[in-house]
Image 1 (tube, rainbow, N blue to C red):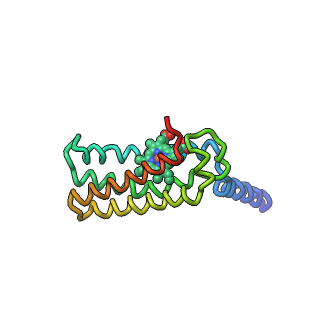
Image 2: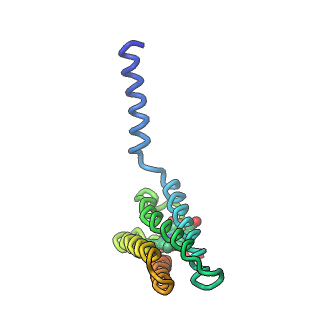
Length: 151
Ligand code: HEC
């Protein structure tokens, strides 16, 4: 191969990589992404809730595992609320976009309470864990009451 072909190949590869890295996701993809992460939040919160309600026996190790996952997932949600997905079909109410600062603040709050929950599950007793779990799900609920379409 001569240099020119190599150079062209290099540019093609570079362009495809940068396109992958820098291109803005499609609005519908952003909606699916955030719904997926939110679903994963619910997936992990559910079994913790069942333990807190006494529907299944409290298992500290499992609780710790689920809380750690929640801590890792929580900061990922906000990324899916890109401006171009504002009018895409979803269960986000227009109020969320109109009060973006408050909306984002609630996600930061979720990150904090989830992270505190994960920390408490390391050494905290069951009572402290339950208290922090309730504080966490209240952040979910408050945001849903304000910004999620009711079904
Ligand atoms: C800052 C606001 C906010 C917080 C905090 C929040 N949610 Fe939501 N949630 C939403 C919005 C808005 C939607 C609708 C998303 C959409 O369709 O665009 C939603 C949707 C969902 C869905 C449905 C996803 C789907 O498949 O359509 C689940 C499940 C969910 N949230 C669980 C949770 C759980 C569990 C927590 C707390 C650990 C939580 N959410 C915290 C705003 C929030």
